[in-house]
Image (cartoon, rainbow, N blue to C red):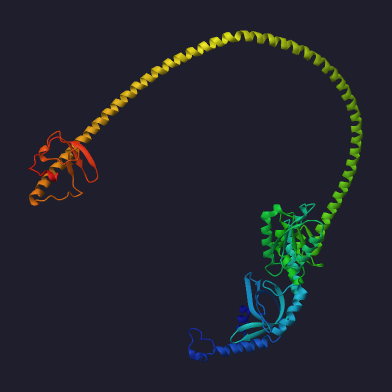
Length: 531
């Protein structure tokens, strides 16, 4: 395969397709006339030259920079191949070309390549291809892939695997997991697997059939394809904050093709497992092949079922050891019980003899103390009788003295109470007189104001009555809304009887008032009937 610069150099060595421009200082007549070629003719000559020069196919080594797989039957596979190398002058040169694997050839090459290399064609993979150089006037240069050499890719993958293992060893990640202590009874499991994987179902079925209780927490992850390493690392990151809740981490994958195993050779995934703070068990389902992930794990098992069996057998061994310890403890305990029973029987006899002797001694001491207590009680009783007699003699005199003292105290309290009552009575009388004075003063003020208003109302009423007698010779009934000034007996009051000091009855529409005139205003003669 030729790079773009190599193609240009090769074409430059060929005979010129048209006459060059004349050199500076020479006349155009000195050279041949210029002949311009159409672009299509130029590209046709390029195609013909490449077909003649590169008629056969060539083996080339390149890296897949871009890949478009067939999306349906009959579709073609399109690749972008790249190669970066150092020239003789030390410059980095990158060559790139488009390549095509036609549909029928792809159906032949792809399965063979996957069977030998363990993986499908993918971006970043180095491959050895047998290609034919093709050039089209419209689409430019391209390569037709006619064969693939899987052995080259297998060798490159093996080289990459060795480099990955060397990097892990340099960072002490191959044996770090082995230095972690696996719990004796790992029952709290953080399982990283695909929820739909058949291996997970086998793993769970084995645990359910076991006589031991396992607490399983599933952290879902993709277990195949290019996204598998990143997905498993994300699951490990999810387990890390909760590591106190788990005993071990189990990574299982059941079934699948050999091509899916390459995801577990990823350096990032292997490093994440090697540096994980909990022991990691792997069972990725391959009997003969060992992934890099298995090298960094604490323990590698072939299948998910084998992983479950290992956990169950570990608990079974611990159960057997504990059962053996329990039997030995039972035997030692029974022997100790028998020894203690004999010891207790001997102590029981000794204690019974000692108790009987102590009982006899205490009984004798109790009898002596009983006799002493009876004598002391009689002596105390006689002393209490004598003291009671003395108190009985003193009691009347003490009672008389106490009574006299209480009577004197009561008299003193009576004197004080009488003085306090007199003071309060005088103060209350003064308050009543003062209050009465204020009440009378307020009443006189109110009465004086009422007399003034009454006098004014009477003067207006007399004047109005005189005017009505002049206009109307016959008397008419008093409207219910007028004010009447009458004698206290209710008889009509004559105008000439209006003088200072006259007692009158003021009849309003809603009430009657008894009052006394002070200084009535002089009014014209008024007919008594109007009053």
